[in-house]
Image (cartoon, rainbow, N blue to C red; front, side, top):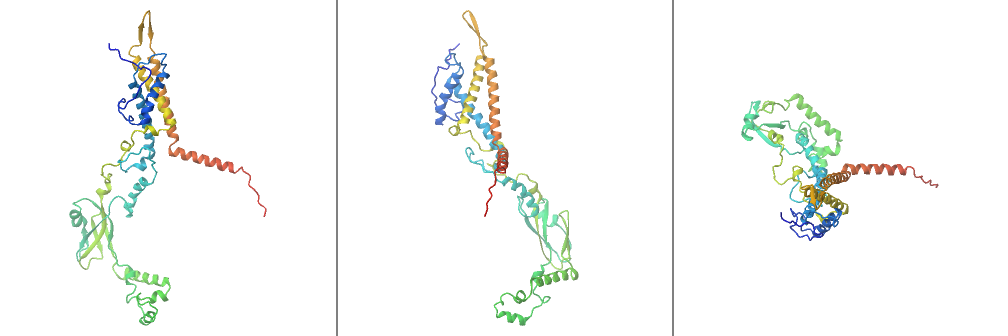
Length: 382
């Protein structure tokens, strides 16, 4: 059996010594790799006992500990900000970037109501028209428009522009009446360009409104009212019966556009937690509490690896006796320490989440307010 060398008591890290090389070019990682290896070996009893590992084993555990720290850190960041990040570009890494919360995603959801109200949204309102034929009252939108302009796709009519002209356009007609003498008089005051400016000069505002109402009431009683009936977004009946050929315009949406949940098919957008652009953490930027967690987790991984090595032979014969190795004890210690460290990290991250932070701020504000109520108020005498 080959004589494989074990930890000699020191090491010298060189880029390429880790399996993935995530942090090999980080100067701080290069400096700390040998320090962490020496610390772990010493914590395991070196030089009083041999450590059946090599420097590459220590470096591997060190790399895994940093990656595990970043994994949990960024998982919580993603959960905290997924509503803000969803739909944004995946092009730039978010490491060490401040993600400012916004209402973009909530507004996108509420835009669906805007689509129905005609005030916005992701579904485009389109404009169409059909030809009105003299003396023809009934029309089929499926035959005259839908089959031709939308290739048979189902449409939903949102607005039909079939109504009489507003009364204001008939305000200054023979029905309302004006006085040429008064107009000539007001011409001298410079109101000639505002035909007829006399009404705005000599009459109160409610007089204009009364005349507009009179025109509208006259049209409703003495004329055929402009109206329509629409059934199933297809059968359209026009009132009054058209007296001449013309165009009838309307707004509509294509139902397929509204029912399609994928509103943007572009690639390179954040769609779920799997493609939020977080990379491995930059080791040089990790603060002291983070570095301490990484070192302790590295030691737990080293214990786990050493237990696997020593567990290959549970008993080693020596002259006149035999030695029982501590593989089981190391394995148990490693498992317990890893669970404790993960729970500790999760607790810290949960406490730092926004809703917990705001809750603490509220408690602090309530406490300050309670304290201030017990402070004596000065009395000023004038």
